[in-house]
Image (cartoon, rainbow, N blue to C red; front, side):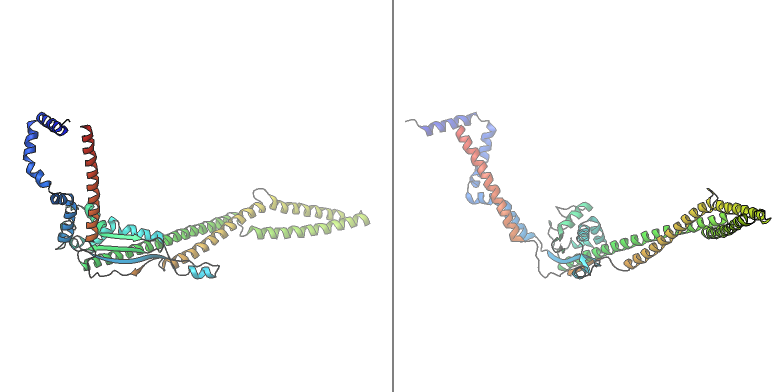
Length: 399
């Protein structure tokens, strides 16, 4: 039988002879280290090194962190339904406003909130207390001294979560002392209340400003309408052309009645005394009455200077004045309503749970984080072992 073991050893020696000298020197130099690594406890320590480092940090170095929590909801004044009934009772009072809750949530997590918070309390000093570890404090190896790094650290230490179903927003703040966490949470709530009050003032000022602008426009329209009507009266020398038209119509009616009487007398004379000297007088009178009636009617029906055109212009000016007066009344009522609304607060930040003063540290969650690193470590070791086994089997098949 062929000695396969001897053949493989001879092949390995021949392959080793082909390797350069530095390879053999490296093999001889690392022989003690490889012998130590071949001991399974040492391999286990190397494989679990990330987990060991994590455990050492969290159980021997990491500082305790206290968390203060508060719950709030942003509400707006509901407008009761005029129809009454159950809907009136449901809509009466305050209703939750999710859009404004999102505004407050976004503000707390913004750079403006960090700037206001740092101006109200010594925030950088609170996060650099004695006893804080080198990774969790600020500034640290993970977060530099710049403003942008401070903002990232702030978002790491602050949590604000809004629940759509209930409309409640939970605010959590971590710090290295219980009183510091309580102070940060309380200050952020006060800053959020200031933001809501600022939004209220802006809405109220905008509403009053719009109402005042509409009132000024209505007043200007009323003044223009009265000025136009006064100019018309001064130009035409008529206070009310409609009254003049009524008087002229009465005059035409009287003249027409008198003309009818004269015509009746003429008819009577023609039938009874055709040669009476009164015929000429009555005829001249009837002609004069007819000319006067035609003249008075012409005053009404003239295209430009007649009373009909004057009445049309006058009625348009009067109608414009009435519209302007109605607009003025509506604008005054709207201003009164806007001022009444401004007297009330439109939005409320209502605290549901006040910031608590923690009596024990809740962060960091040491066991959970160590177990998480352990699971990830084992998964990576398993994947590396599978990859190494695959490469080794592939190399063996190649030989």
